[in-house]
Structures are given as C-alpha cells and as structure tokens.
Image (cartoon, rainbow, N blue to C red):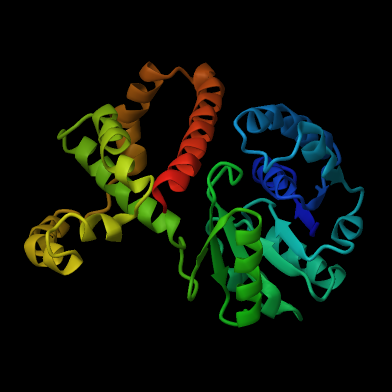
Length: 315
C-alpha cells in the first residue's frame, strides 16, 4: 500500500494514476488547474470497467480502483507521506524545474522524484536541487496501464540506490523498467522510434511505398515478432549460428543500406505532400477519438493474450 503522488492530471497523469491504483497504491492526484482533477477522475472511471472486464485491474474491483485515487487540494497535501512522486506536467523546462524545486522542498526525504518527460534530460530538470540525487526520469509509453515498459533515466548525480529502488518499485507495480546507464537525448524509445520513422518517411518520399503499406509492413510483419522479442533476439534467432552468424551474413548489406539512410527527411513537407491526406482519407479527423478507443481495446486484448502466452510458453 505505497502512497504515490501524481503531479499533473492530464492524459499522462491520469494514465499513471490508473497504473498505480491497479497495483494497490494509494494515489494522490494534484494539478494546478482545479477543474483538471474532476475531469481526470471522470476519465479514470470511464476506463476502469474495461480493465476489470479484461482482467487487467490487478484483481481489484472497479470500486477499489476508483477509491484508491483521491484528488488533493494542494501540492503539499499530495506529497504528504508519498514515497514515489510522478511529475506529469507540460514538456517545458522552466515549468519542470519550478515543479521539481517545490517537490524537493516539500516531499519526504525518502521519496523518489520522477518526471514523465519524454524529451527533457533529468540533468536539465534537477540541476541545482539540494536533493538532486533522488531525481530521475521515469518516461512511460502511453498509456502505461496497457504498455508496461518505462524508461528509467538517471542524471549524472542520481544515486545508484535511487535507481535500484526505482526499478524495484516499477517491477512491483507490474511495469517493466528499462534501466538506462546514463542519459541521452530521446532515451531509448524515441531514438528507436525516430530511426524507424525517418526510414518510413524516406520510403514514402521516394515513391517506393505508400504510407498504408509501410504501416502494414510493421503491423503485419516486424511487430508480430517484436511484440514478444526485441531486435537483438530477433536476429539471434534468424541465423543458424546466432547473432554472430547473422552479423557476418547480413552486416555488409546493412552497411550499404546505411549510406542511403543518412539524409534527414522533411517530415512536415512529406506529410503536407501526401501522407496527411492519405491518413485523413483512411481516417477522418472526427474519427480519431473513436480509433484511439479501438487502439486501446486492441492493446487490452494483446496484453491479456501476452499474459496467457507467457504462462503457457514462458517469457
């Protein structure tokens, strides 16, 4: 029954609140905009039924999950007794520095202060704080209650014990911490995603394939393997002698491809030239919200399948 503070009640904060509550944590939710709290609680209530129905609520009932999340009137009240603080404010360095300074002053000395930042380095956020050794980035892949991986990123001065405790806590609540050795722009996920998106834009820009076929190539091709094994294990299993054999066989081919992948494509220009229209023809703008709900329903089904497959076949 860990007490957790979620600072910021937007899309990411709401999703984190669900994730913590599902694990049995007492969640205190605060936002500088008072109306954000009831809006967040209403959203959470709308999601919980689907989680319970798909057995993704950690064995808790709908009421137990909802009762585990309480709004706080002040930042100080939210931080009282919390041993994990998840900051989910806007992606602006001045705002995050100000928020972390307040959290460092008000939170228990034992509390880990974690930011959900997807791009700002933990060193930039926590530099100059008296308690900077307990500050990390814990960047989720949204929504974290459906996608378990969380990038746990240290600043140069983050204490090793903070990283150990952080990884232990994330595992205990059912997440999968990706424990980085040191910080780098984009962390792990956005760097990998960025490399893949660059090549996707290049293929469309050059007239080699449509955006739809690139999407299908991932969804019906690479992602089927990547949903349970990663790129290194994939190539380890794709050559008779393992990864060393794969590198010997295909390394030169990929080295040649790399020469044509060095130029940065113009994402905005390529989108304006055709991908945007192609996507809106496939999915009108007024259907985005419904399609997002469809995506989350598919993610719930995939999580349930992976759990059953893990039990049957092992990880």
